[in-house]
Length: 145
Ligand SMILES: [Zn+2]
Picture 1 (cartoon, protein in one colour):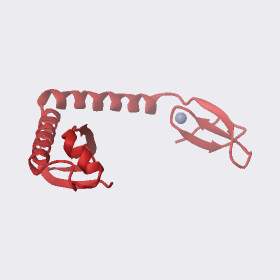
Picture 2 (cartoon, helix red, strand yellow; picture 1 turned 30 degrees about the horizontal axis):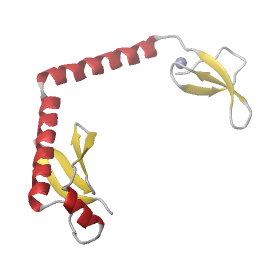
Picture 3 (spheres, protein in one colour; picture 1 turned 60 degrees about the vertical axis):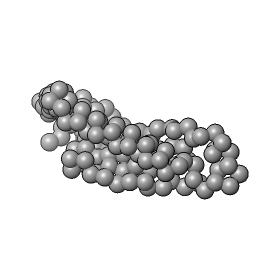
Picture 4 (cartoon, rainbow, N blue to C red; picture 1 turned 30 degrees about the vertical axis):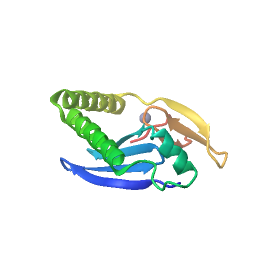
């Protein structure tokens, strides 16, 4: 059994993909360079499932069932993208970005926090835990740019 691409769409400039793997319908979409996705399990008609298992039915779903599943998923994608585009969500993302910038600024302005380590060559090194920078061991007090 292999995964089949059912449909590729573009919603408001965000590429979306729906695939089917047995009874699992998976969707992915890209939003602002991030990948989102989930899957849904649609229970097939029991009789059809038996026939499919026996190899007497090629498709697990009728065309209509497959179309209904697709429509449902497209609806979920549309709602998700709209939610991500909503002013509330944008405000939340902006707040997160700001706090990240604050943290970066804090890290830049703060004093280093040194740890001595030995490298792969067993030579001692200084490692700044705060800025994630490693420098060779010195007799002086360590510092980095
Ligand atoms: Zn540092």
